[in-house]
Image 1 (cartoon, rainbow, N blue to C red):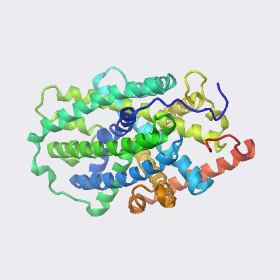
Image 2 (image 1 turned 60 degrees about the vertical axis):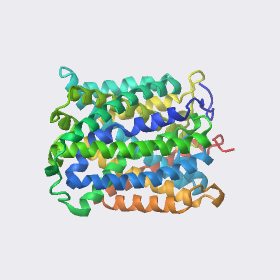
Image 3 (image 1 turned 90 degrees about the vertical axis):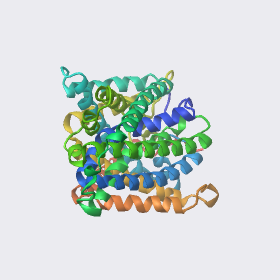
Image 4 (image 1 turned 45 degrees about the vertical axis):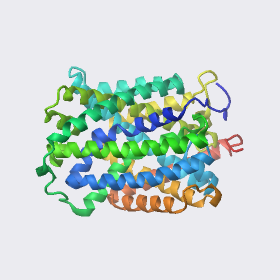
Length: 425
């Protein structure tokens, strides 16, 4: 392995980057989290979906603006360090890792549920564990191979979801939208916070900035394309699902789209949705390991985490220690977590991450702000409002996770000293 600080291989083009973003978004959010959101807001979770999409768009533009100037692994971890200070940067990085590890646990459990329906003789937990192991190995093979596999997975998923949406429009019933908002605006805002978690896959593009070709041009375009496609697709699929079976039925299962597909009179839709869900979850897991391992790499470079995490394989050009550690922690999340608890924890931590993203974007010099200050200002307000809609227990747990991280950072600096070799120019 090469020494700490060795650069990664720039192998991802525009559509590879879009594929990574869509692969991260079209998974747990559309196949699992829509059921959770329907449970807290009823059919009005469609309004929450719109709010989440708007806030995601503001945050995505802020991320793209920052990544164009600072095209390094780590995303907001790097921006926070450079524009706000080391503690801000560490807080963003630590919350990203906590959120995405939690999200990966949700995705792996969701994959197990869908794949078990296709392979009923294989236990769902065994399928979840097997997916984590196999996709960790896929990441070790290199970014180019992982990106190609991801594009194939995303293509299959998109085709099936379009079939589900277009074919199911004729089977939507108005009756399933009454009552529309049984829990009022409180439920709508809570559903927006949960669904925002589903949209945040575009952050993977910025986190992988060190492996994107022509990042100043590619990253902003990839982020905007990813968010636009995701918002349209989510809105169409969610509308058809709730209009077909109703919000209570969606909330009663961990596989809401499968429940909707079972009620449709479309040839082969049941099996196709199971296949699409399973492949989508694999795509998300693949991108989660990519993103988390690159964040661990960046934090290892600055000695905010053990510097061994910054070691890059001399031939494959991947942070192999970080990848293996990521896979191991996700396995623990799968074995000991539950979807509801993990989801809410991930939602709060990622909202804090994006709040720091927007604060960093507000601190950028005027000549670097391609879209003006109002975009990060609205993104910040959206993050704060959605975070406030979560339960006090979830917020306290998230704050506790941050405090543990700060203590760990202090221990790392005491043990390894200040970093002397980072991506700083």
